[in-house]
Length: 402
Ligand code: FEO
Image (cartoon, rainbow, N blue to C red; front, side):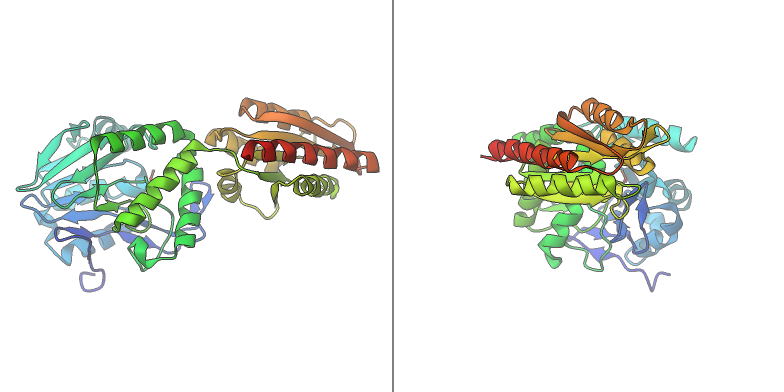
């Protein structure tokens, strides 16, 4: 293995020793069409330090990359920045093989690792501002609770100015290029936005606080080494991704309206198309997302920069259509902000779905501007109602965007 999987130099003292998961297509319900990486880093200082590990099936690949630069048994410290299994799944095995002097994690991380794995390993808890001397180089810690787990933290290597940011500023993108400056900006923005929408969106107020804290402390990393996707090593790229995070966290509404729906016999789809026609005529930018061909993680990504969310569902057995229930449950958990919206759908005899859509939208704090119901196939009047509602929502979006 050692001859095959090699470490990649990031700075004089830091090496990437992670794994590229080209085959990943499902990350707890988030469709990862571009695969992902589980990044781990080796710091070659007097105290050799491993930052994070990888998903369990890839543990040997991780140590093979370490072995390409140093005997893994020479690792003194292992730092767990985040206890989710894609980064901690091989931690117990690595500790057993390497027998490090210390394992470090945030206060919540030490607790989470114990609760997660029910183990007896002693984990040294560290707090924001704590430092560990690696021998001529200091590693300091910044707790980032709820970004996106209670245990999450950043580690910062002084001297090399490397910020190990775990999930933050990352993306699910497998590529043989390990640095962001080697990849297309359009691809980076799409995948980073999809990642933000599906993982970090509920914690946007904390993202804004963290960005303010970083500005106040004057921290100016030369490299941002994330746990997923490419490493940011150019100042302009680091400024760019920080700027995007600020924009996404603010969720300032735009003229974009996302129309999400499913249909049984085409009536709710016809209503969706008519709403889209009204929205476009009113000057909105429209994205129609039939759930038959749109995955929930793609819908979340589209909503990240939208100003309106319109949801349509037929009534099936007195209930929401199952795919619509799925997307509403998912979006409700992601807590998007500053949206206006509408509920619509066709029914045969009971017609509960529109009320149920409206209730979920209201629970999400979406301002529901209107709703349209159609008994069986939409009449000319019902379609006129859809068109007018589309126009009305577009007008609100255009006014808000001025
Ligand atoms: Fe990449 Fe939250 O784990």
